[in-house]
Image (tube, rainbow, N blue to C red; front, side):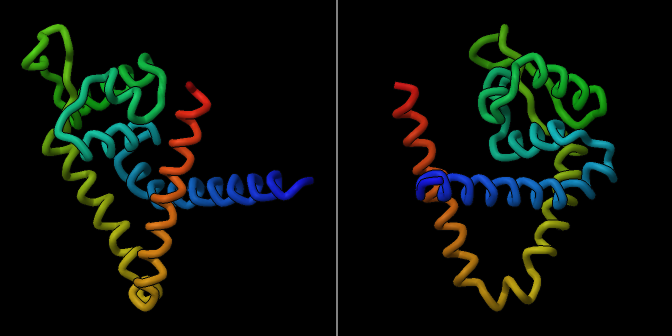
Length: 151
């Protein structure tokens, strides 16, 4: 293997480990509220914005439109999402979290804040900030390379 291959494998392994950690951190809330991983992902994305169409959601979370539409329907049926027509185009259905959906995410954020507030993180705040900066840089770098490949 050449150096580039080793570097790619190392990065890939780290990404897999991060995804596993994210799954562990979200499993408790998923189990407690009976949420599938994609349902939680949709709710988290909607929390980042005020409302989105299914098309916007599917692009934001990189999932198939039909799957996201079914996920939104299931969440709306459980009272976690509100569906309403877009102001500018009545053909477009917008999704937004309900109060019930927001309360579930509050529990999720509180649980994960507790994990991140541990003494280890407090003692190493500077290192944590450097890691976050590094992750943002990496994300930007990969996004730029992907755009170049798409051109």
